[in-house]
Length: 139
Image 1 (cartoon, rainbow, N blue to C red):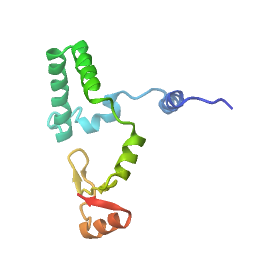
Image 2 (cartoon, rainbow, N blue to C red):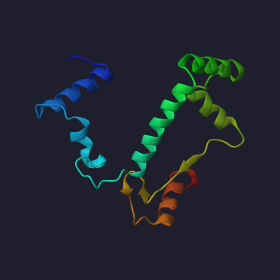
Image 3 (cartoon, one colour):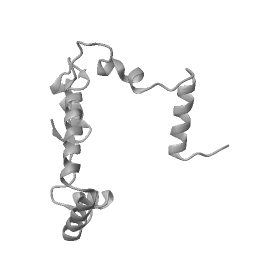
């Protein structure tokens, strides 16, 4: 049996999946219905608007600050405040604090990118289920 690392395994799966039809789908073919390709009346979703604006913001930020300047600022921040706390240490610190670690649960009836998720959700019943499973905060 041949053992593949996770990246090679994923690549192999994607190549096999694409070869079932003989070709790998491009973005327009795979996601065209989401983007409204071929529909002149299609309007971008709220999520698409957010992504488009983020692309503009990142381009502007790259012009305003070079990669070298950004790295220098990151190094200065790390030397002053320290690096990121490893997840295990963060969880241990939360457990040791007087506030302890809390689980926040969120439920939605709709999403900007997906539309209705569960329009008939009974919020009170769902809140009870979440608290039974250990949620400390509900949204």
